[in-house]
Length: 137
Image (cartoon, rainbow, N blue to C red; front, top):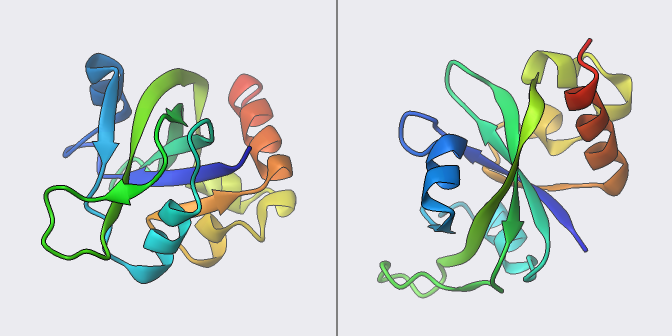
């Protein structure tokens, strides 16, 4: 099972919106590296939901509930999407500042390639962030 991080502008679509909707099609991704990450997703994988903009924090966990498929709303055949469902809100959000200040997370794409909207997360990084959300600094 793989893990990812999905970025969203909370004023456009927040984790609370996902909780209310229960599930959604994760679309709107057009950058080649992010699309490559979506294409590697499988039904049953998990993703952190990261709020961009003023918040800059990981706020929740979603489950990938479909394999990638062509975006039905796009004319470009290269654009793919997945369906996700809300799993749980983190006990405490984990801010970008905290991630950047944690040496074990220094190699995360969130730190190194900050503009990438869909990013892989290693099992070790995932566990550190989950732990940090339960025991904030």
